[in-house]
Length: 240
Image (tube, rainbow, N blue to C red; front, top):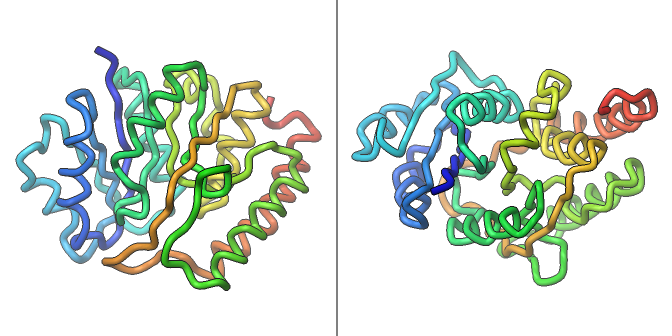
């Protein structure tokens, strides 16, 4: 049986963590969860350690502080590669990504995709419970990325993703040095430049009910200028 690892970065997700772990593990017997916690003061890491699946199908990496989304995922990727998982996922802890869609993302990779993206903006996808301003900003960011990079992904900022292990093994992860949501764009752009096949799978994204959003002005600024930097780097063969 092929094995899957779902990486969930956390910072103050005590309200969601047990429920999301249970929901993910219930989808398939070969699903495993890796929580990467940035020293959450609310006790998220302790909740993981006290879960009945801990050190069986549930694993934890603790970091000294809030070090950013991108570095959390890269740490998780390295763990997944070293442990020989066949499929490695990115997923939020707050139920904005429906755990039931994990199987659809994996199916897309089993049918030939190298990277499958849970896409809000491909046909059949959508967003629930977002104010118009946030939806406009998100769609505008996606259009901006596509124009600047030329990458044919309708939802380049998406954070619900399944990778075949070979993709992560063939990317130099040290080149992905963004800490915020720009990391999501960079990973897709790097994989696309390496000629890996990216498949968008429509999902309905639901805004979090519990906990607090991690979006900030610094993250938005990194995205605007980071995309220009990606394009410049690509022109000089950085992602080859």
